[in-house]
Image (tube, rainbow over all chains, first blue to last red; front, side, top):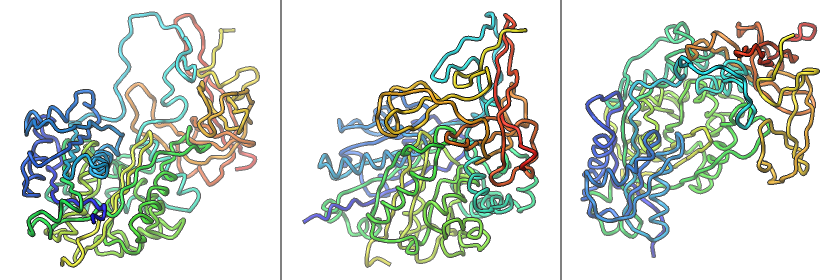
Length: 403
Length: 133
């Protein structure tokens, strides 16, 4: 009888960066075809496709990808779910398998952001007479960004960080150490957008974007894609031994949205839904944070990574500052976090991110991560969160009995 | 005196204070127009005046903003006494060292813009309570 487990048998990602000569489909096809090759499969083996993309989501990119790599008539799901888009596409592919629609599914995440900023542009020159008229759900008469605080990403995640800092005494230097670590880790990752190490001083003295985050403490925008091929337990048993021995088990897959909290409408609460996802994932996998050999978490800003140490139960409650000081999340530490370089340095093409972190963890569990390999890694956790909000946590395990 | 209008409808100008939509069932507070309560699903709401004083829960000092927005400015999330959490600017403070845990603040208003008819849009922000800081 089948266990109901779902396995990753193929995975790949493009390098992250800015690729003016490649369009969205080039990137998606590159990752999808590489994942299929990794699984020793052809597109005709795939029974369902989930494609995650944010900024071109109204273009039905799953079907557009099929027109480049194989139109086989299978169900296609186009998925968008903020920064959890890629991870949500993986869950859709899993649910397709769990629902008995297919035993083999492909999930692809892709984004092409180029050098788009996150701050918006200057006000357009106006021709019409300016008359204040209340509009929208708050009856606003003018744009409130900068008038009633900030709602842009750098400010939101800075405030999420200082909320924790004011409660638990975290310092700017401790936040900066997160960025120091992730930039140092990225030097070993050939697929990272940036591979430059920074000293703590350079990070602290860099341009402040939104205090406490300086420029190297903010992730870049960029282009990239990642893909996974998933199979059911029953299907796995039919595959070639060389494919089976590299299979990685998805021991937990959890998606949450943010429950109501009083402060949530003033400052998005990125903590509660992450805690709920992590706790459910640990229970589903039957493991605890101490069992993890590596973690890829959503460090869109250095402040975000630090508070997620606590949300994912990697440190003592309130102890995230001490955790980074102790060296625990460095690649030589107790629980290596973001050995890929994380979003801060590997990059964050939004739709790809939630699959790229599965690629990273799976590659370590297979013992194939080259210079950045965490030796003997058997269990890893991935986490993404996007404002809206959506949070996905996956726990992956190496196949038992495979060294 | 120029005609004045609040920048958002949850700011009441005379005298200056914030008003929220309060769920009649669970008393959850909302600043926006509601279809139903996000906490309990209730559909009946009343208006509730909120306190002008509170404590800073979170903050950031924005240095890089969109070109039309003067920077640096400090954004704060404030826990209002008696209920309600709101985001606004902390007025006349851009040094993060001045912001300590539970910093006490009070509401103040300012002119945020003037339209072509001379109507002033009045915004609100918070000031540090020097007597308690």
